[in-house]
Length: 168
Image (cartoon, rainbow, N blue to C red; front, side, top):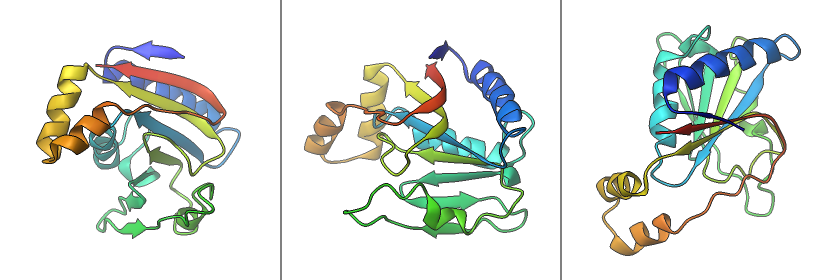
């Protein structure tokens, strides 16, 4: 697992990994994970809007909280799919049928990536616990929920080819 202290270094490495991987397959999955309040959704939103490296926003799909967002030039559709409780491992198939061929990278954002059996890249986000609590307090109003989220753990129980960690 390679550890990075800033986003530009992480994106540089991710760009190289994506370029190499896409020589061998038509599309890749990046699992973006971290504890609640670590900035996963915020980073995913930035990637969806701006792209990174050699990849423009229209080449990227972001699946966060069971909603897929695409940037299709003039439209930004959102497609929702919640997997049935008895079969969580759907490998994002309900979403992939909606993807145009020019979408090359799927970012799957989840504290515990339970819907997939494999990720080409896993990115773990880590931030200072005080900052994480502050972010959760801005987002949530229930003190018990915040306490529960602060005590959460991540469980990456899937194989992956490349592991990256962003510590901010």
